[in-house]
Image 1 (cartoon, helix red, strand yellow):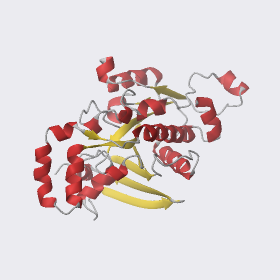
Image 2 (cartoon, rainbow, N blue to C red):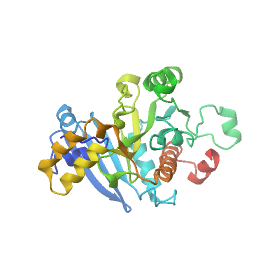
Image 3 (cartoon, rainbow, N blue to C red):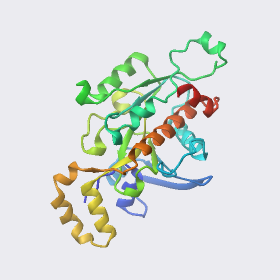
Length: 298
């Protein structure tokens, strides 16, 4: 049964708890924050998990509907793991906020992009005069969605990449989960790029190193579960696994067109976008105080 999820940890759960050929899993505690790193090493591992080759890092966070302290240890852990995925060097990094700001559950990317500390336009003399000689060059973009622009998101980002030639792209996007308890409690980072719209069954062109020519790090938070996946998962958890497939079939195609999201989605997106944006800012500008960065971008 194909339960829709963008999370590598959930894909691993679906395959089983034992060793998977071509997949490495490392779960550990970092000062009270649970981190799970999954590496898909080859084509066999990719087929088993249904995920492209690459590194997937999941950080379990305090539910965004309850959390209020942006500058907790979670921010440090997030920034540290984002930095792990970035290529070495000090070249320009392009941050792209994917999604539709008009749809709350899909607004993570655009809202986070608004809080990115963009510095590419700051000249050397100005940097020196304000005491920021060592800040990294960062550019930000919100490409919008195909329905509004008439242009594929990947095409817009590819054009910008050709023009400014960054050393890497960070793409922020909302994700889909198979479990309600994952919504707003998880941040996933991956080195494999992203497929915009895949979480809601509207997949567009892939944005990755193969299409752009530079490393693409995707960062996302699960904000939705589709109704068919949720119903099937709940039935299986209740011990009615034999009926789950039949029930999922009854829900098609209507159930696949209904996305479930928490009632606190506005608060969740606001706080998730702040944490993701500040995690990126701290990873790219480690010499600056996080509170100073927030003061600049707010």
